[in-house]
Length: 216
Image (tube, rainbow, N blue to C red; front, side, top):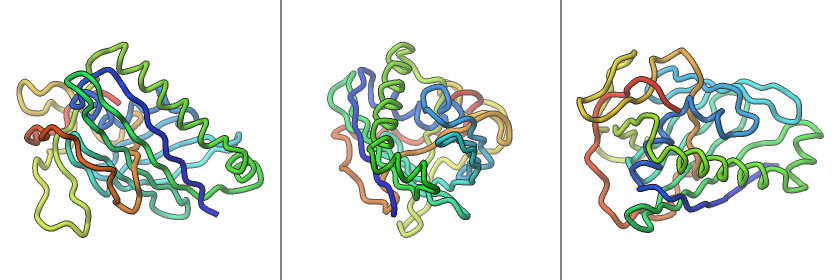
């Protein structure tokens, strides 16, 4: 039985700031309960280490879609079933709604019992509250990546393909993701099926190439 959770929260930062922070996978453990580390393997692949119900688990995940200021979607590879999408909706110049949907397959009695009792919903809701506190306290992102990852079935090519390794992105764009293979990484929430929750009313900024160093 697949467990599905969908939660939203409003954060008092511009949509660009909220989105940029979600591209910094390695900062997730700072506000996501049970996520121990996420390592960036390349532009679209991450390695997760999580602890659920006292049980440690590792899996690889592929970023299946990434559109600046709109959405980030991912799904796991291998035996663990885990997928999600996070979408961003502009409410005003300094206010953004962040919506998270995650699907996964509980394993073992503890995880299945927790899902049945609503523990998964409470965890995601608490994670979003911690994200809100994290980004509103900073009022700026720890880094950003403004490139695109189109859905496999989408026409066209991706823009802003970054160069791998450490180093900064384009001048004036701030720091972004660290060199791959070190540190923790970032998940992306949202609908694994690729179904969206709508687009923000403001047009997204043009993509910026380069995944800079540092950040969530």
